[in-house]
Image (tube, rainbow, N blue to C red):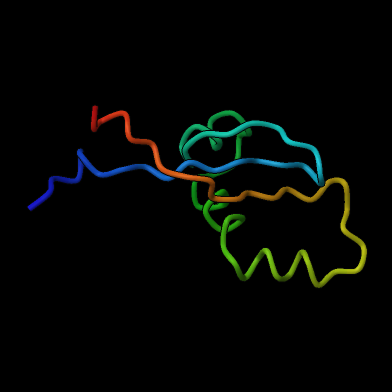
Length: 76
């Protein structure tokens, strides 16, 4: 059985409109942006992505969070 402390953490890329801002875990992005972790995770869902994509007017202010990989620092 794996302990929770040894699990991989998901890495996300944060964009404002089409402009790349930074990448990091949900915790890191929340700290950097002042948003809640739950908000970052919501922004990364497929449902929210489809809502943004379905809007004809993609705002340059829209925050987009995309999962891009896993943090494997615990597994050297």
